[in-house]
Length: 218
Ligand code: PRP
Image 1: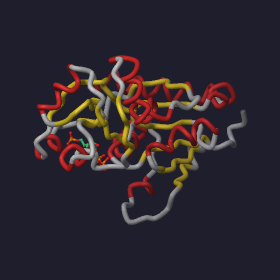
Image 2 (image 1 turned 180 degrees about the vertical axis):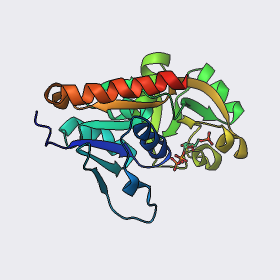
Image 3 (image 1 turned 60 degrees about the horizontal axis):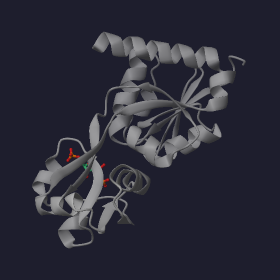
């Protein structure tokens, strides 16, 4: 496709965005404007490389990429698994490492060992359902929450939670523990399926350059 078309990259707001911009900088694609924390601008352009970057809520990144509103997305594996969109997952960026876990007060281990019908609070109903139903064969009630999931077992909304554990400090400070690990997680690059064909050369170059940087960092 013509070099005049802008390649659009969607980044999830929050923890991953800074590392994502850093790795693009490492392959020579910078976007100074994006570093201005006071800016309310939503989209940033690099004219030299004919690239656009935008920040969206993490769970929306795979949606933008599936529909082709973004050619490339950088987002956590947790979001990719939860959203289950039709996108190509092309690269593990190695940063944003954390784990998806079943957590709760340590006494709740019993409920897991004995396959009891329990309530599980989570921001990730698909991942939780898949884990309990398909991997453990345990029937549960899922309660969807939007954040501060650790509250749920403390105030009696659920017996356990399925949530991300990074440093473990949120759990520790609230008297909860990891009961079971669901899967390890990290930041990934996803690509729109049509863009992969139409913009193959440019996208492949970006992926190859990113891989080189990751190799050098090892
Ligand atoms: C995430 C996650 C845990 C916490 C884990 O929440 O849901 O609460 O980070 O990190 P830690 O192991 O380093 O303590 P986030 O801060 O993204 O906000 P949220 O609770 O509103 O989802």
